[in-house]
Amino acid sequence: MSKKVTFDGAPDPGTINFGVGQPSADLLPVDLMRIAADDFLRSAQPIELNYGERQGDVRFLEKLAALLSDGYGSAVAAESLFVTAGNSQALDFVCALFTRPGDTVIVEEPSYFLAFQIFADHGLNIVSVPVDEEGMDIDRLEQELRRTSPKMLYTIPSFHNPGGQSMSAARRERLADLSRKHGFLIAADEVYQLLWYKQAPPPALGTLTDRGNILSLGSFSKILAPGLRLGWIQTSSELMERLLDSGAINSGGSFNHFTSHVVRHAIELGLQQSWLLKLRQAYGS
Image (cartoon, rainbow, N blue to C red):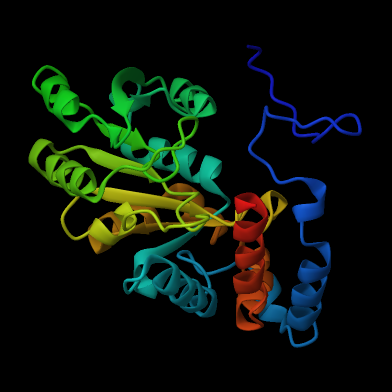
């Protein structure tokens, strides 16, 4: 398979592009975004076009926390959230902050293949652990941890890419506990957590930040539109301090300040919530 990825969508009528996990054109909400953007701009103040607060606009974080609390079925605190420019940028950012060339990252086998290129960009050694119908094999992981000292573990716990399975709640808890015991960081790619059809997956790893070294990466790419390049990291107060002390954040402020305002209005108007329901119905039919 070529390492070059095209984001052009379907090149010909009737052709579906399986090279990228992107919605079809009829599931990209142009009218919704027009309404949300107009609602924001009609009341926008000049300060809202300036650099944003490092962690993200407080009003957006509060709306996002409410959205996630409803979707996860457990309380999410606004102060545990950090604005990113989508999961790819978030994963790259996490690697830059928490790893150094030569460090080891444990991944699932198989896994999202383009994440490997991000790890390669940072000079990381990749060690794989197999998955089964309950997600990453934690028994095999424990065996690997006896001979490997990883800096980070990358997992897609809900609706795994490419397998589609979800990690069981028991395994999520064991994984969180192991991260504390062995001192590695979990980068949980939870981009599909809210995109369930018939039954919600087990609670997000982001809900276990009090018992594990967890950075839960989420995004609006799958639940609204990829072109927004807007996402979040949910984590503990200790790890949040490191995110906020990065050179990129101190230099440029919030990674996607303007778009977060527009999406905040989409949430306030109930547009994001109704669109998520539409996506679940469309993908589940």
